[in-house]
Amino acid sequence: MTSTDFKYVYGPVASRRLGRSLGVDLVPFKTCSYDCVYCQLGRTTCQTTQRSEYVPVDDVLAELKTKLALGPWPDYIGLAGSGEPTLHARIGELIDGIKHLTRVPVAVLTNGSLLWVPDVQEALMEADLVMPSLDAGDEPMFQHVNRPHPEILFEVMVDGLAAFAARFRKLLWLEVLLVEGLTGNETEVGKIAALARRIRPGRVQLNTVSRPPAEESVKPVSAQQLAALCRLFPKAVEIISDAASQNPLPDSLAAVTDQEILDLLARRPCTPQGVAAGLNLHLQEATKRLHTLMKAGELSVLRKDDDLFYQLVMAPADQDSC
Image 1 (tube, one colour):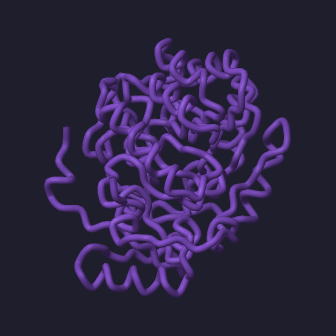
Image 2 (tube, rainbow, N blue to C red; image 1 turned 30 degrees about the horizontal axis):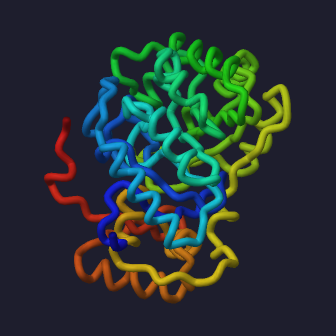
Image 3 (spheres, one colour; image 1 turned 180 degrees about the vertical axis):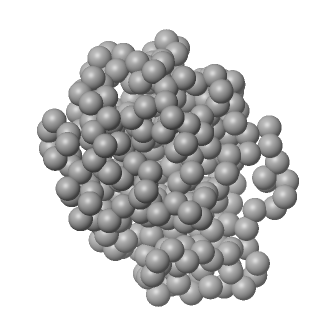
């Protein structure tokens, strides 16, 4: 297998929370239970709660084995990608297979919408780290920010987070992503903080919009406001900073194909600094390669504040709904 054969494994990604994370994509592009206003991948095209084996577990494990053999080893293997990973009906078997393959810890990045389902809870028990989200403090704001599938009720979702947290014996980090003008104020964050007391995660991570969002009207909360809102939570809160992931990490440089760059950007729009840090390239080399791919029509560029984010140009067939 060559690097161009990878369909499900991508990166590593320079993650703000996980260092260098090797990504595993378990569902087709934008197959999700939410349609969040801030999503970096745009609008959800297949909104569902139907759990299925969207991609073959054996094929994923074979790719992962090859990728790990190529090195360097990542800090985490992150089950995330371009949709909601817990929609994969065999995610528990995949985690077990990864555990037999490597000692690299497994992180599941989930919106938390299905943690009320007993089978989903059981499937995640062998993960080393589970990172669910909670972006709203009540049903109306939940509908406004996350735009969930009609089958997902806010109170049921929150009860599921609390029930899973009570059972899970490893690391559980709750991400709270705030949006200016919607949830980035004391009233709304106070509601979220009250729910965090019920859920009792090991860590709360406060975040805001950092990449071009699905809705142009969505704006980030200022760093000063994030710092002020931390005091509403019952214990120390970590503010996630973009700065840590924008500098190349000090490993040996890697030989990276254009396809590996495209695979990364298909799941996560990145600045040149983000591509360099994730894939172990010099910044100058990453910038040159991105410019070449853009001229070839493979990439487009979005500006957010003072940063340029590169993203894959999706063919119409890639954007079909389910």
